[in-house]
Image (tube, rainbow, N blue to C red; front, side):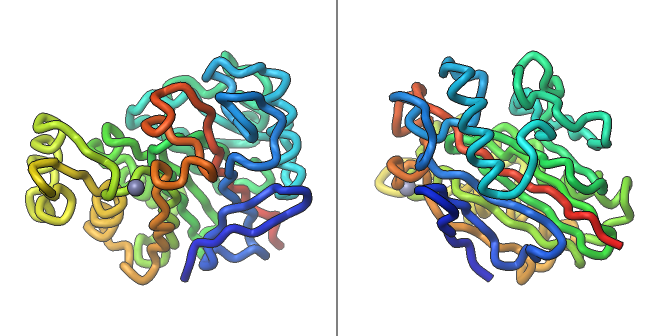
Amino acid sequence: MSFYLEKSGKNIWHGKFSSFSSSLLVHGISTRFGGTSQPPFAAMNLALHVGDDSAAVCQNRQIFCESLGVSAESLCTPEQVHGEYIARVTRKDAGRGSKVYADALPQTDALITNEADIPLMLCFADCTPILFFDAQHHAIGMAHGGWRGTIKKIAQKTLLAMQREFGTCPADCLVGIGPSIGPCCYEVGDNVAQQFCDVFPKYRDVIVRENDHHIHLDLWAANQLQLEEVGVLPSHIDKADACTVCNPKVFFSYRAEKGKTGRIGAIISLRQHE
Ligand SMILES: [Zn+2]
């Protein structure tokens, strides 16, 4: 299992999890490369809500979706609010938020579906993308795990929603944890650290670590452990282990760019099957 970047066309790159079968689904995490946005959004900003020119964003979405082989017009994307609402997406939601932010699924931080050809997209700059694939029930999901979502256990709740809606068995589900701010760079204050210790008492020493009197948070571990807690196999969790703050040329980083930056997109879409 590994996470890797694959080049597709003119300087377009797809971040991929090797465990996700390309015959059953399409997925890809974008980088900053290959788009048309100007600084500070250069170049492949996929988010409409950050103050970038919306024509450039729509063009970027077109370029990136085309390179993946999904329809930009069918993208289903939410208004992410660091909450814990999970939407089950059906055919009627295809295209929501694809061109206009006001049309995005309101106040939603995770999407699940078992219908083909509806590309789900969430946007990120340091928060953790968590992708789910259940081959047995032909279902997918994706969650937005910033520190607030992670502490609300949005990843775990997304998986449990897939179990409820599609019959997903956690032991069968494959998970990909994408690029985001790593424990190397994620310094937090006492208050946030304490909240994590309270929510994850068993794993507090793994998730919250002190280094030279600075407290560092490991969102990757917090998401991995909350999934293992409900039965996901460690061997089924593919972690990118790529820090966005350490790699601001490759990925957008809210922290590295002091809040003024674009967003990468993570897209996942089921293929039709017989
Ligand atoms: Zn780092």
